[in-house]
Length: 194
Image (cartoon, rainbow, N blue to C red; front, side, top):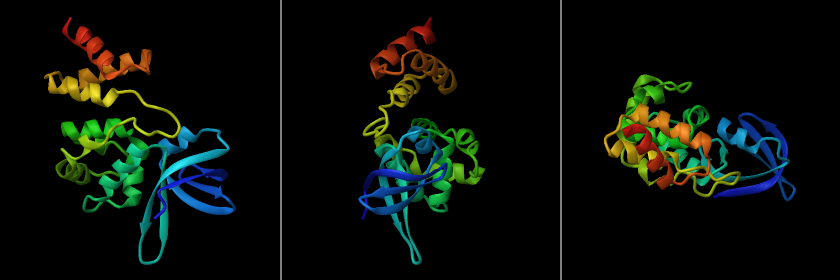
């Protein structure tokens, strides 16, 4: 199985790349989030999920290991195929999706293109408790993400409303994208309690 590809970009479209790796061109389906992270780069390094079906071998590429792990969890849910999983990851960042599943926010999941209400409910039902194992922001090829999701989870666990916690955390991470979980939680507690 192919787990990682690094090479020159020959063709770049919002949902697909053609990567030249030592003279071999690989077609890789990607999410819009991965497309945005690649930006104007001439080269790409992607974590790969290889899908083998009766009539094709399809490669799905992700800018970070956590995005690939979320994709694998999504396709493990009955009725969610690779195209639906990519559509979901194109509409919601991994940390937001993880938070929505953990808190049972089916409305946030349903807001993503191509995701119906029943699919959103099934995702929450089958993945709640499993997504917490995904370490958001680890092993990103293009950039290290902050600790937003962990801070949100901590605040909700402390009893704060998920939506108000999310607004405060977004404001904090907007000012300081490199803030650690501890820094975000401390600042959020000050803003939420006083």
